[in-house]
Image 1 (cartoon, rainbow, N blue to C red):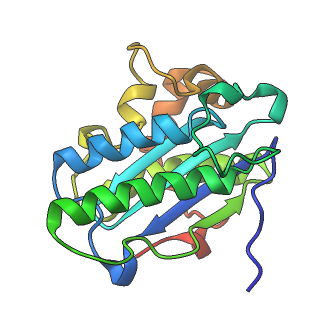
Image 2: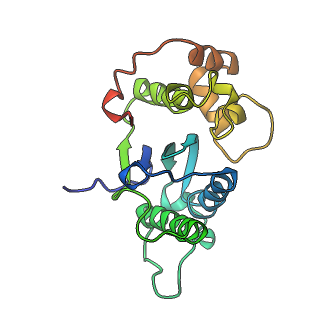
Length: 202
């Protein structure tokens, strides 16, 4: 099966889970370390709009920057693999490989941790975009991690409705909903998720 390349200047839903459904986050340090690696490898090449990490899977909504928007000095390469042009998939490979190595060492396991290839779906319209934002933030409720989405610590919802500093595209995201109040109200509504029902990870 041919894998869709990540194109610059486009929005994507990036999602994946542990191989055979295994947990990829077992404790607080795992979540924190994944986010640190994400900042190192993905922040330089993408703008993040929403994310959620849950037990055996994750969801991320992001925009892949154009090459002229990328600070190449912040990209991480070995001395032998520096590409001549931006390859977003390579940055994700660095993220997953680095996390897997650390996870395997900590829990004395071997082999792959994530399903391959990681899933990606281009976001082509605003209806899909908004449903996806809700689905990502509501995922902890959907999977019974909590009763209220604002109580879950490992998603972007709390950051978006707060005023604390963030590298996320908070202002741009709120702009799609006009106001923070509308953003909150949208998350309180019931959504049928028709645009993304084929992407839901159970």
